[in-house]
Amino acid sequence: MQSYDLELNKAIKLVKKHKARAVLVQLPDGLKPQAKEVVDFIENQTNAKVLIWLGTCYGGCDLPWSLNGKVDLVIQFGHNRFVKTSGWKK
Image 1: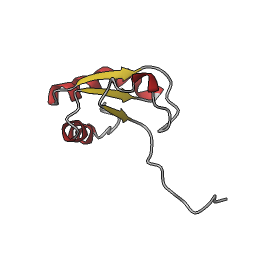
Image 2: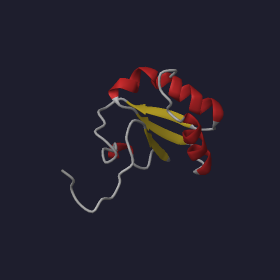
Image 3: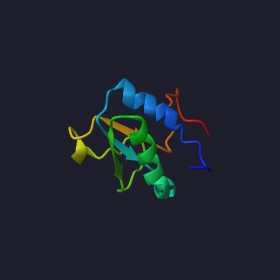
Image 4: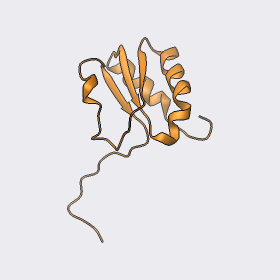
């Protein structure tokens, strides 16, 4: 994780804020080799059990609905926030 600032302290704050016991982390393929480090970091600083989604992830709308009700929080890495615009720009 030395190459990237994944802002894991923000993730810790979210887990604690939501009192999440089961957390699902989605990583883009390029960050999946660091998955264990992410899991260890979050689990060592919270009471949560962290699961890694190893399936594909095409962005913020691509949630693994099969885990609905089985996790308390989903944290996606590698995606920007959606910004509302007034129209397309050329």
